[in-house]
Image (cartoon, rainbow, N blue to C red; front, side):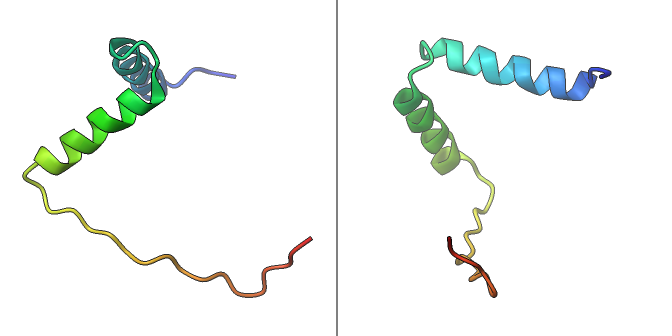
Length: 57
C-alpha cells in the first residue's frame, strides 16, 4: 500500500505532540482542551443524533 504524505505528516505531528507529554493521555487531553478554550474560533457543539433501526445484540 502506498504511503500518503499527508497522513504521514499528521501522524508525525500527533506523535510529536504526544511525546511532549510522555504519551500521558490525560495530559494530552488537558492540553488539547486548553488549546480549544484559548482559541479565538467559535466552537460548535451539536446534540447527538439518535440512530434509527439499530439492532442490539
